[in-house]
Length: 330
Image (tube, rainbow, N blue to C red; front, side, top):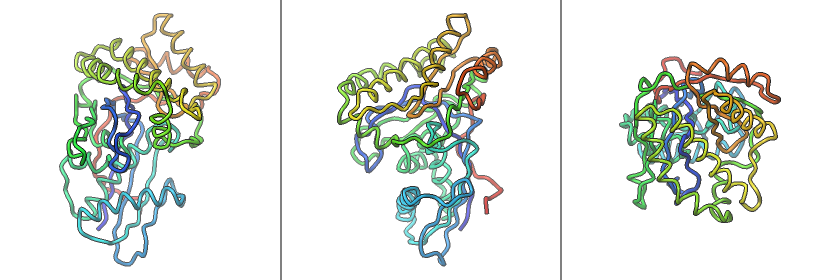
């Protein structure tokens, strides 16, 4: 009753922000993402009749009460699916900072969904696994798949038509790269889940954001399929800025950026003016991701290394979907 799984983080190019159903994690709009090969989570789950409660370690440390409660809540869903009440020991390791705007919850819950179901002898197909991972973190539904992925918001109240599907495999566009610039490893003060609720209820720009979501989705999907770099970059960058505009106009204001974030955004715009093809995107956090082609990656990394506040850069290509790992964490 033990299994280990690995999943990669994904970064949305046409983002989702807001939930039409919090309990079922149903998004207010669909989204499109790129699964990254350089950011991953590995999770081992063991169910045992001798345990009196679930336990959780993340990156070698005992998890917080909030993290344990969230994980146990998710495992309750898995236990209900299987028809058992056995508790589990869970250990998880990330190769990048968690809860810092780098989609650690996406890779984390995708890995947990696969490891937990396999530990109980369940073999879900990819669609069912995506629906399950969604219950832990919305973006985790996309990390079940590799390459380029679309998470469909669905329309049914029970969420049965809300899941992710592949747009193109990881081999589709090998020249496309995403440079992750880490500005801080601190955990953000306001979680994405809480931030979305605040934005939906208070931002005067939120309805405008939803109104443009479908057109951004279509543009991103078409650009990926046609390998139109500038079309994808322009769509992703504007989509990001529109999303953050709703956060900035939330009460109280949600400003996930650090001063260095703005400096890096302006730096990327300056590089573009100098003829380097690159675009930025930012999730609910201070970290900046730079979309570029492989031919320009080294030059951009070198430029970023001179900018204030950039602690680390990682050049990522498209990654694999969630998979079983042979070597466990315990």
